[in-house]
Length: 325
Image (cartoon, rainbow, N blue to C red; front, side, top):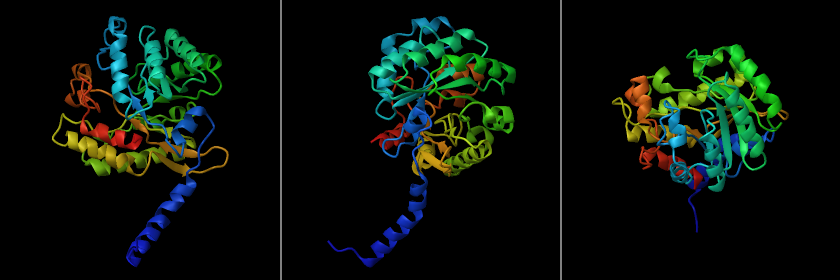
């Protein structure tokens, strides 16, 4: 078959544009979590997960949640994702999540401590990390937006780090998570082995449509990586699919399309010893959660899900499913 000369010119031009980025992308094997995320073949895809049928505001609901419900959640997510990002630890729920995830072929879990002042959470997370060492790729988040919303203080993070470090396998890195403006604080920026920000154009750049909002998020993540000099995992971002005329199932899908189109790994500084990169391989979030709007009084808060409360996918879920395929 013959091709016109113009086709070869276009192809050469494309290769010229793409090859520098491809050349920069080296797998980072500093930790198993980094290897999983930066793999050139089948890089990890994680999803922020709160069970669809759990309202965590009532602690008794943790025990009432059926294991079959957790299994249905993770089975629905599995065609697009092979990693989970959690928000906290509860003895009646979190061990079941990891047990089911391992059975369903998930490869990675970012364990989380919601309240760094809780020794039960710290010790429970550490025990799970030891139990699944070598079976799941893991990292640990010590806190989520608690500095910003004054649930705990910087000193509490330091005390929690001192307690959990000796209890974790050496190959499990830690971090904390705050909104974008939290990373102007050097203590947050330097905490742990990687940064894990929540970057929401919906709150910080409300005028931006999906494509520009996605580009802005990637730019802000790169700025954090440059300042921190270490890996960045963007934990929360995205568009909701309701709550404002700008936010529809279509615009939500467009956001994730543009956000992932340039690749789930962006190399910032390809150092031979400690490469600096950003992972855009985390989706937010698994399911629509009506209780979040009840708590926050914001309609958009119940509409972040890639699937609805009955586990039916919104169009945005297909973006991640196609990445997996």
